[in-house]
Picture 1 (cartoon, rainbow, N blue to C red):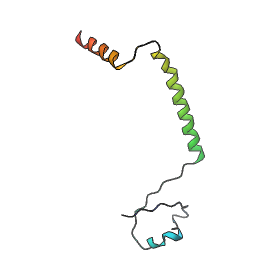
Picture 2: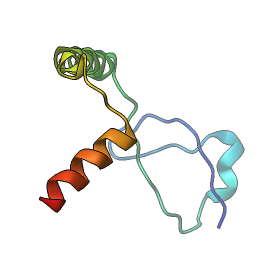
Picture 3: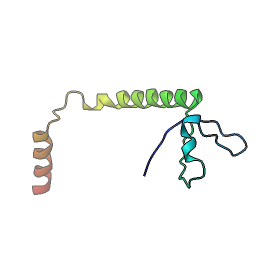
Picture 4: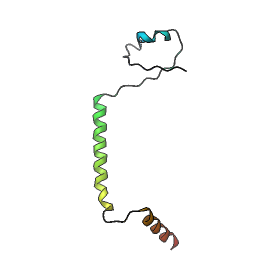
Length: 83
């Protein structure tokens, strides 16, 4: 299977092949359409990322002054399971 990537604008349901891709004319092809992200979409994802980071740091203080290691977690789990 051959694959080619190019950018085009759809007009009235028609995609025009670039001049260097005219060998595809008349062939049965599979088409996958990917919409380019608009600036609005990018901005909202940046905002979501900032909010997510803020939420993380809000709860990060819960672990302050605690011993968090693989050994301490295992010791606590095994002690609870044995009782």
